[in-house]
Image (cartoon, rainbow, N blue to C red):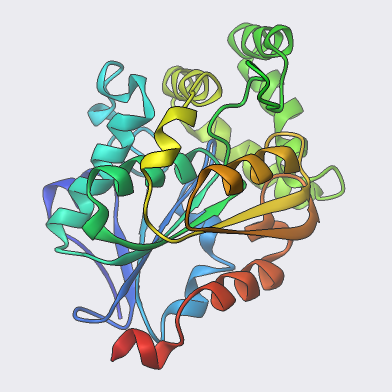
Length: 277
């Protein structure tokens, strides 16, 4: 079954639902910076026999309502977490499995802290609570490097995308690089720059101790955007977490190593018969 919700929040976030249908447990996929829900095409269909598979676009990205993007509300990741929660409320979903990539990992963390009953398990793919190193925390970027990154983005957004896309998918992935580049450039550039700045300047380290949902952290083995040190940091900070390493370059294991990513998620989730019991 393939259908779209008619509810206001779900329309705003361009929600699509496939798979087992109403009454089945739900697994929810939320994409990262520069992408849309299509980025899950190699992973999400594998869950359709046992789950309602829910995919949505971040407001301001993909086919979500760009007019709903508010620079104040969406000036922090908490606004996007509220958008996610609004969708779950309208679809009357609880105890979901949430799979978030990169910045959406932290959006899922914030949503699960705010309404823990909505979430049964979290899968954080290439997450980072802070991208800039500070206070003994080893992020991906020094502050000076981040300043240069954001200045380059503001000065020449298409050129910035051409430089960032290969880092995200790995330099030996020309087709995926082109796909991500096109996805970035199809987004309203003003919204894309604003959300990128919100993403790269976020700091949610202090929120981590409040998360109680069982969590799987999946890091790419050679990721310059969310390096392994960040995965180990999250594993130490989250009281009920597991850490898995996917042997792939770049920042997008769901695209570059979908079979390994799927296997890691399946090991973390309860058996289908237990889910449906």
